[in-house]
Picture 1 (cartoon, rainbow, N blue to C red):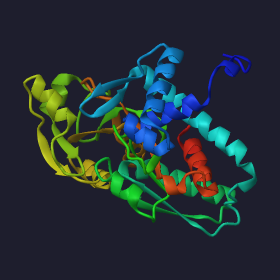
Picture 2 (cartoon, one colour):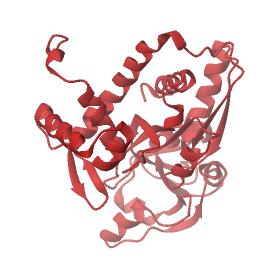
Picture 3 (cartoon, rainbow, N blue to C red):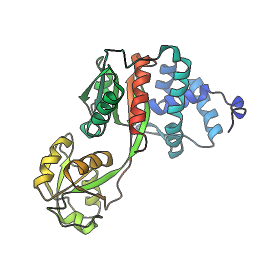
Amino acid sequence: MNVIDLRRVDLNLLVVFQSLMQEGSVTRTAVKLNVSQSAISAALARLRSLFGDPLFERSRAGMLPTPRALEISARLAPALTSIAEAIYEDSEFDPMRSARMIHLAMSDDLELMLASRLAQRKLAEGWAVDFAIHQTNSVLWRDSVDSERNDIILTVTPGQQSATSQSEPLFSGGYSCLYNPRLLQLSDRLTFEDYVAVDHVRVSYDVQRGWVDDMLAARGHKRKVLCAISHFSGLASIMSSMPVVATIPDHAAEVLAGIGDLTRSPVPLHAPRFTISAIWNVRNDGTPENVWVRKVLRELVEGM
């Protein structure tokens, strides 16, 4: 589609679409956009016709996006942000002069990947603005969004959001296995047989079973968990001295492999994929510092 073709499209529909992605509900989308539910339903019908896809399917958890809707949202969110930046370019945030503290909340696997990149960027460009990183996760993210302290929350894209938050996807990822080649004599590509035979360290904020345990149980196996920890930061010391395998997000595995001279391997299971999103309270929406820090975050994850 070229610029001329866009004349036939009501661009307000794209705002409705992105709000539906965030809310998972016609009712909450109507509240957020301050229009009637019937107007949102009519817009959704037009969106379905425009894209030739149902886009959202009803479930007990709300309106779940189709694969096509997820694909559209990943491309649309940055475009809408760019439009906002173009409109409000006279109010740009200046990191060279601001003494503001930007508060980010994320789980420590994301902190492993982003904290050093953010610090390096600040040092290289001589920013005066400061950053503080706080802990949250995919269960506690709502409390982090509601906190007046936090500017941006980074977490696995939630199935539903409230009318008080906005979001945009940052990157998608999967999982890798990590082990110490000096303590475990395994191939660079773990076999399923190796995977079920070795000891594991489980990383989970509540130290409970996860998707690996469920998938192994479905195949009649049980993961041999030597220990379970609640923070990724504990992995470095464990893996330096223990013959164990950890199954963790790719972005954390890459960092830890470099720090500890560890080996990464694909997971010999059908590992799920996930999307990490930036989420912020609507009270911060459109502010110059909010627009700026989201742009920085997008730049930090480019090429992953």
